[in-house]
Length: 366
Image 1: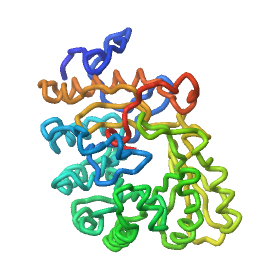
Image 2: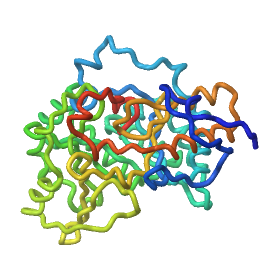
Image 3: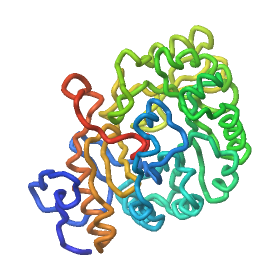
């Protein structure tokens, strides 16, 4: 293993102070400045999407003139797998493929097959999953399972077709997403999680219909507070429906009780139906910040490492990959970055953060 030190400043897109002490080329679990381990890695495989959801890629910003990343800028499947292996050596146990819409990435099944062959530090299978808008899931589900995908999360912001078409803003019918969910279940992807971003006055009337529809199906609906990701979605606090209100609405008709997390740092707060017919979840990044338990790193389509969904800058790992750095050097760089991590945006959200220019969610995934 090389003795060369990789200072943080060499791998950042902005000037970040170099650690006060030299770093060797480490492997093994990492802890950040707030005592949070590195457990999850979210990998964006494309910045493109066939939807223009108003809370993520509003059409007035992401129009026909918007410049998406050129193909040459994207990490290759081999580069992604190499980085994944290094992150796993640092303790990552779960990898989620995101976008944009990840199923738009050509030959994605080949990447899934490559990642599915990896194991964790203790030799266990990697928890490999994917988030999709479900638009072409019915065509891909069997191939995804054959490649080694274990689970899938589908974004679905309402069951009413008119509401759903307005939110995706490309006039896409809800029936096609439901078809994709059914195909995923039939192919053996389970449990299927269904994410609904709730925006007051836009789709909050869909909370109970969503709960009713999927209750007893084995699928888990998760209601997500509308967040101020990026700088293009026109976020206002008044548009947020607090998770506590979501639970009150559901509990009034379909009684629920709280469950323990599946693992430390789990984002969703879990609730079970009292009649034993399944569970739901709520994700409360605005009203009940969970920064202190966040164990996630995010890798953008072009190979930049981000430490928070609301990050303002990333760290260029692609430059190391394509600059001839050895695995040990890249591992040292990742260790240096994570050990200096102090992000807690949702805990400090307010006037002081209002003007920050944050990276767009479509670029680094949700």
